[in-house]
Length: 426
Image (cartoon, rainbow, N blue to C red; front, side, top):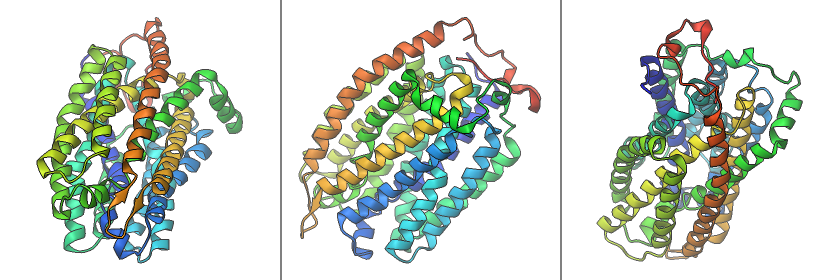
């Protein structure tokens, strides 16, 4: 199934939008090695600094879920992306720990909903048979933030101070916002479908359906595996693995390049070979590499790069296939609400995981992190459990694809006039 020119534009916009949001979240972790001494905070306080974004995003996602299917998705996207840019700008001018903490809360309230809106747009405009490719390209936003964003952010923080990366992200975000305003068509075909008039009833129905609950449970386990290692990865690399702070951009660059190459390939494979087999492959590889990574001692730079590359290939395979499978769970009238609740669940679980990581890991007077191996065991266990749970999600996806309504989108469907957008059924 070939993509139309407008579909390719949509994918590019969603990927670049995700790039800025993910970079804003990720950039804080590698800055940990700088912020811990400069702000005079303990590991538990820094863990809160990372997790508070997730908690505020979780609350925001839950509050907006009931209204998510009642507005044009383009307008929803612009509203929350504007708030995200403001919050990121505040991070760039923060002069104390508590100011930065408040700015992260604001950023999370707006930024945490953007991912769910993007997922709803992808599910509206692309049939399930194409979503592996869509998620594969969107996953490159994560990798691109490492290749281009994180090294540049670390360079700016080393050259000036830790405020510079946030100001850079706010500036890039403003440009992306203009592209969305002038290039994206209204996405309002879902408004023609039957909805619950009451927002609370819509939310209650979404969070009470057993089929949806399985998707939320899978998201919890996926978030646990990702958020526990992230907050202290840079501090662990510097203080435990013996890598100089100036070499961190090299590690992120090499890992990101491999992920940029792997993401689209894994997306195409998930569409052709099958999303669940690719998920199982990525999870197995991830479990092996997480266990190895968390038990490393002093390691040469090339060894750290190799382990990170293999680990992130596994993570990319998991996230590309899992995102495509989970997008098949909701019915068309519930997509916005489901994605908002799903995002809320993901952020809350991620926040809990980051907070727990801050309690498990202890930094000694020498700077070395203790009990990092314990995090590896917890993450590997969560990954193993996800394989079992995602099997039931795969059955839902197969049922969707077997329906007569799952016909491919006509070749010119996405090139229709603005008021005639096509809502692709699962």
